[in-house]
Structures are given as structure tokens and as C-alpha cells.
Image (cartoon, rainbow, N blue to C red):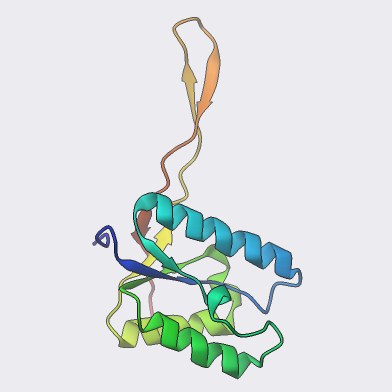
Length: 133
């Protein structure tokens, strides 16, 4: 079931296991942008108010508090490489929250009436993340 527009979406993905923090920021900012475009209210652990240098445990406590304010969780492709994201997944399951991911549509190639070809960017959507525990 796809969440209703206007609901709060917690973004979960690898943070501390990615060496370049600028890459982390780009990935989470893009997820925020996509969720806003889809009509949801994004909630990012990067906006917890804690300094980057805080301990992993401090971040997880703050992130869990943020997750509890949300209606569903969107997992980025990097979640499998993250101890924190796996913990967030367990919490979301325990709390009965829907687990979602962004669809991975491919660009379409269309032939124009003039015989030229053009790329069409597909619409980003959310889909259920199917997990076997």
C-alpha cells in the first residue's frame, strides 16, 4: 500500500559506512527532494541537530526519536551496508510502519514523428520494500 500524500517519511540509509560525507549529504538531499516532489514530508537523520562527531549511539537515539514521528520509512539502496539502517528497519517493523523504497525506473527512448530519438525520464515512485526476515 502506497502511503497517502502529506504523510511523514523517514529516510534510512548508510551514513557512517560511506567514507565521503559529502556523498551522504547528496544522497539524502536527493531523497528529500524526491519525497517532496511526490507530496510527502521528508524526515532526514542528517537533520537531527547533532554534530557529525557525536557517537553512533547518540545518533541512533536521536534518529529513533525522529523515526517515531513518521508514518513510514523509505530505505535508500545503501541500507544493506548500514548497521543503523538495519536497526531502523527492525524498529519500523516492530512499530508496524510501512517499509518503502524508490522505484528504479529506466529511461525510455521514444521516436519522434520526425524520426529522431529522445530520452524520456520516467516518473519516480515509491514501492513496497519486500523483506524476508
